[in-house]
Length: 55
Image 1: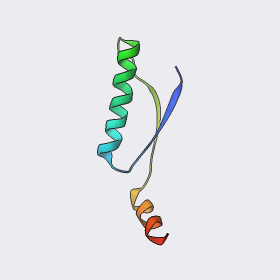
Image 2 (image 1 turned 120 degrees about the vertical axis):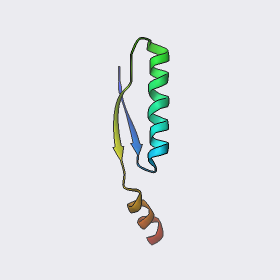
Image 3 (image 1 turned 90 degrees about the vertical axis):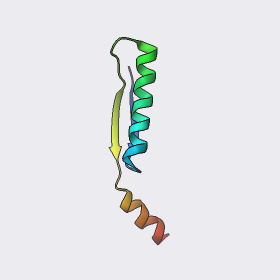
């Protein structure tokens, strides 16, 4: 199985949706108790807001 990456942190609510969707699909395709090999990086959303405001 390949490792996939997820960039989270825009909001916990959206990050959990991506995580759940990937794992549900992995389990559907592979069966049993399988889950995806995921590396997640969560960004500080405040830093994104600051950068957007500064152009």
